[in-house]
Image (cartoon, rainbow, N blue to C red; front, side, top):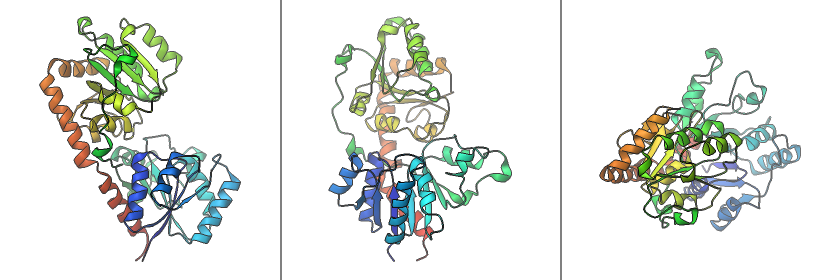
Length: 362
């Protein structure tokens, strides 16, 4: 029996697109809903995966929900797999009263509460059959929510890591000289979009705790326009060696050019794509004991895991890697190997197929 699945996304990253294509090749009768004006739509069309151009303009899009409902009815789908909040809220409205299993993807820790009415319109809705958690940390959050008597049943939660392919990460390292970084500099990289939970200011503080004569540079990539961060950088004694360059489509190759990658998150981290990309390029990572990061990084083997909000611990980890090039090389190789062996796209596809089969009687 062929399983029919309707996936709903407003735009997916490379691992998710590769998962859609892999599911299609694995025999799942898959259709993906996403706006036409996205790279996702183009990639799936090229791969001959059926795509529907439905754009959900808000979390309360009645017209979009009606389009989804018509498609669910006409397509006679077994499962609707939703990948973002907008799609989930509209998808639950669209599928009300219809015989379809609902799977929801969750990529970060937190921001769900039994006391928040919106949460009941999304992840706490009892009509959701499974929540796919991108890391055990996300699953553990749901299992430990307060009050205990309202917690979701464990069988509704499943961890499926986003898989990658090392062949995706073969571009040459970027040239950091365009940002005023000398070729001989020791460079710390960080790729993130600014949010208080990302802890970028802690990394800025860690920079100031490194020996002055090392001339270490910090490369900050991503949307990081925030007055509190600008003030922190301006007040740093090494402000001239902190380079905030904004969003870049070539962020992975810029990470590849760095000597160390640091993710200083202080709460709610899922499974950071930028961290995975850096590890796949063989860049030794330093992460905080936050969310899913320790699931990616084995402390002392494929990187270092330090306490949250601890700039001194970050600077000490940087110091160890700076002083020992052999250690840096060994950890970088182990980081790349860990992604290649433990976070494979083939495993993501296989586990997702198994999930679908568990929901649909054969």
